Image (cartoon, rainbow, N blue to C red; front, side, top):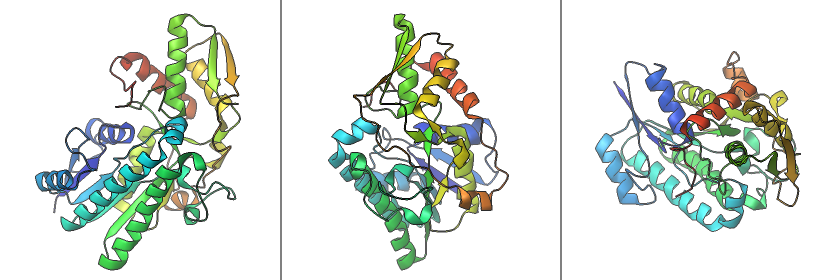
Length: 321
């Protein structure tokens, strides 16, 4: 029987990467029909709009990426909105999937939902072990409840609704809005503006000391497709680069500067918040199941993303709607 795979949030960072993988890199299988939808086609906050979307496409499988997302400062100022909108979106997608007999749903969580006070590296068993960082508690609790919902649907109905937990994702089609973007696109956009102005200073918000793992969106896309086809456990799975690949924000900024061939100096605005100092994730579970997966070299992935932004910044998402 043919699979009809509906990807919500299909025009965002990860959705666009999955589309690239299955449409231009020919990784779709003959029995798969892929459909990429976005908020312009259906507002998943609205239950009727969600039902109409499922009625239109009748998916057998769903990759659920749609969410209200943003960087550190956007989260800090809008915790209520992040909580309510994501609760509504997730509940509508899972309940409508059940009503339409969807065989499998793979949803997207984030390492930022883990407890603020924890031991490292974090793994899949530790999601609910304490409060998240206060800067993004609205987003974090909404995402945690997605994991709870998956387990509750499985307990009551036996369905396979599961989730993946990526580390920091970046790549083409990211949100480059300076106010709300995550760290990689924000730094790329900030340096691009500095170069256009002829500035010889690249100002990085924060101390540059926090540590992060970064995964290239095309690598994550391949892993998402693998999870859809092969991972049939309701428990979440972390999709992250190895622990040894964690770097400081300072090193990241230097890598971005190198990709732009920027010859000026880096300055760190220590009056800006750093957020969590680290959130190292273990990919041991992934490595046991998929030991030979090769991640794209970070320096190359950053350079490719910078090149994409240079060529597409007129069409890129520079302002959050």
